[in-house]
Length: 253
Ligand SMILES: [Zn+2]
Image 1 (spheres, rainbow, N blue to C red):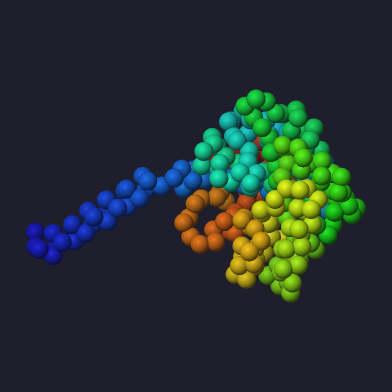
Image 2 (cartoon, rainbow, N blue to C red):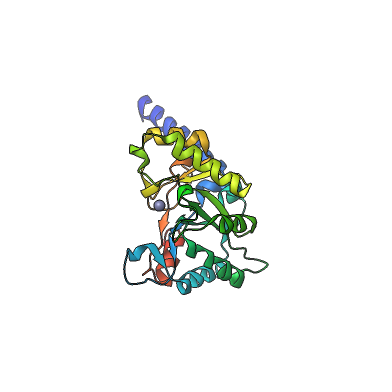
């Protein structure tokens, strides 16, 4: 073996050692991908409108039962730090703050047990509170008081933030309105239509700790700046069967 070959071999061994130790010292966050589910309307599809925005109460209940039977721990974003400590963390999110989301009360009451505490994050459009088909102030206040729900922001007017002229209004005002209503911290924003750019992320990081996209897939800790403002989500559709759901929430399946 030449001197050069020995040097290269040593280098490879040193790099290998560091990669091995780095991998083994990483917190569990990086090793266990976390599903963040996204839903919109909780109701039977009425035959018009976009079907994929609905989940039927029956399917949703079956999906919650699946999570219960398979040892998942639902979390909300205030408890992000607990994700590395609990068994099979999962985030359940609903966008747009539709009135029918109140049906979750009954479903969560039905499926809850000592071992399984269902929780969901509802991203409300602050300018739509009390409008037709949307949650009103009383709904939001009572949901925020319950251990089942966390009310977070989905902007004031649901614009494409990448084109919005007034990010401080969309991001700051919605946070303020929701916080005033619930008396609880608003720490997360879901970007309308999942759209964002570098400026949106910069502004979001000024007001929030977490930003949710609609990039598909599981959350993996990537050790990159701004990754908490690029959280991916897994879309659950009206037609998603319980077998498909099992695949959606199971990494590597
Ligand atoms: Zn939306």
